[in-house]
View (cartoon, rainbow, N blue to C red):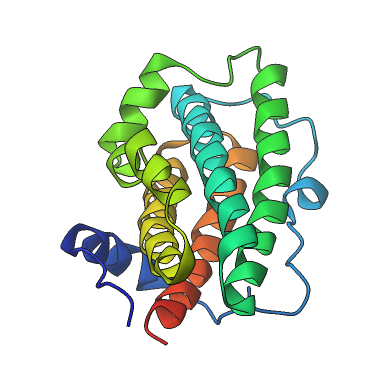
Length: 199
């Protein structure tokens, strides 16, 4: 049996699972992101500081997620976990390109100290900091899957928290629509990972 999800992550999950969706990421084909196709590459001109800092936080968050998903795609023992990791890689790679393009069109840097501090405030840094990712890189064999799933549950729970803040405080219709998709898709991933963690 996998290790229990920490109390902090359970608190995140209570928020994330409030909008629970059917499981979708275990299809035989990795799920294709709608980010690039559903959104114009040129976002609406109206945006505020919240939109900018949200995208900057998510750029960092996605880079962490892609590193962890790449590890899982190679090391996970079960096909379901490898398929999930492949779907995450496909989706978040496209989303990363989209967010970076928006920030560039707004003439904003893709990262900032303010975004890093806000990222930590939302609980993302403690869940997926350099120390935790380094530990995951050195974890192999049967211990890898539970370590990955526990870490990634917290990681995606943080994504849901940040996206909900963007939905309530952002100004850009495109960024807020993207945040809505993040809430939906990451909630579904959390559901699936909890099922895998306990099976």
